[in-house]
Image 1: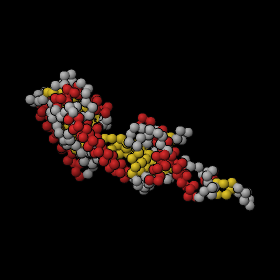
Image 2: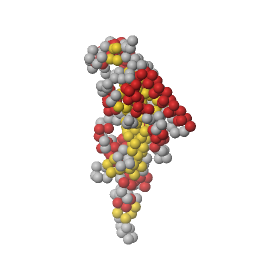
Image 3: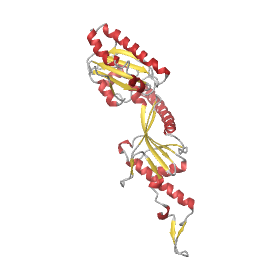
Image 4: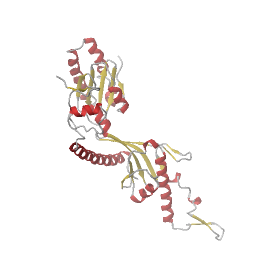
Length: 353
């Protein structure tokens, strides 16, 4: 008896779950706890959900088929390593083809369902509530570049983004020091003015003050970082760009962006002493505010479109428009569930009796 496979929550995982599966399809959602005293209750809650599924199955299925469906999941009840690493919750999907576990960030409502298809709406909400962005934490001497994932369920994850400068230098951890861009002081032309002293030595200071030289170095540095950010992972250029730094430093970065780079969302704070977790919280708060504004705009668009006959809140209208490919935006009410299935050819809705 093989254990369920563990798959991350991605669009590919969702598509595989939506493929045609032999009935019945079993779905479980379970909130769990991080390792600690409270986590001892998780296996018991899990067993109760499996018992509910078994009762539903034995009413219509043979004992051998019920055992085949639940067997892989029963094997997890006493798997200590699974419960140590499961995180905040998971979704489980099983059919006669096999069983899959999808870890979830953030809490989820417990649920156990037997149906002709998997109940995937909770993970659909998570997929569409998670947004990616690019993050640059910038000071006059250090740049840290990340790809961020932020969800409405409390997830805030920043992962370093590998950079290259176009000449062969690579920064795999997404950190760029000013020394890697601005050469040593003795060979910087704006810092050194060669003249005849008593011994013919170079005279330091150039044609400007030390402060002006430092500002020029900073501009060179942040403009170079901007070019690297836009040159790396060109497919991600459409992602929102958030720059955390003091306004004077960020201004030089923005100047270095090419035309068409899109707007830059700035968080005006010095990130020098901030940890990656603290940066993630800042980015998460900003992204959620932006998302709320966008959702409010969608609500206004819906009301206006409905007033002109181009939108509907009726399930039958929505289903017919969906199978005809005439849905631009689908808005799902938080926490609402309606049992039923849509005929993918006619758009007719079948409600359970």
